[in-house]
Length: 188
Image 1 (cartoon, rainbow, N blue to C red):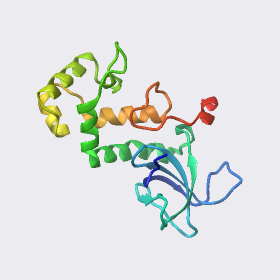
Image 2 (spheres, rainbow, N blue to C red; image 1 turned 120 degrees about the vertical axis):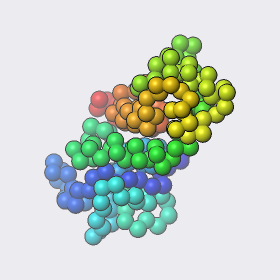
Image 3 (cartoon, rainbow, N blue to C red; image 1 turned 30 degrees about the vertical axis):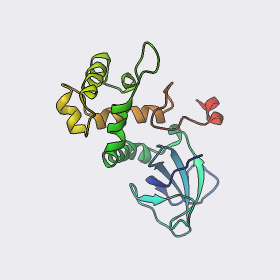
Image 4 (cartoon, rainbow, N blue to C red; image 1 turned 180 degrees about the vertical axis):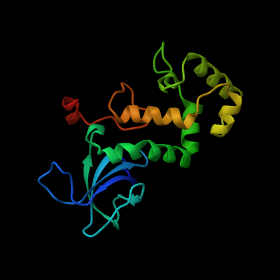
């Protein structure tokens, strides 16, 4: 299984969760590649800042002792929830080619539904316009998409909305984030 190499800190709790008997430092973070919400245990005397990028891969980590695991959106602190949208938007902008490629490659899910229609703000008309325009030539950037597809909603905003929806566990289909683990299914 492919794992996250880097994560962006959403919140750092130097004394741990208020409702926990453990009083060890903990950080909530978002994985860069698969948008996994993670609970990280920092090394002793490490201080993490919101939006700090930390290495969580298999090699020697400088600030993170261990990855406790994935957590549900509902378990995020208020600070982490407030940071989440901005962190996702930043990741989308930094990885624009990856997300433009999604628009270039997206296909139908079923006879009646296209994967582009799962993006909030993109209905049948925008989906048809996107497919028609990409047949003329692949999109090169979000600006190229906006210039060629009239009245297209901001791709960064609508992709952020979709990723947050997936992280909340409200989706039937997961295109960007990993679905909640099976043991979480009964907690919803």
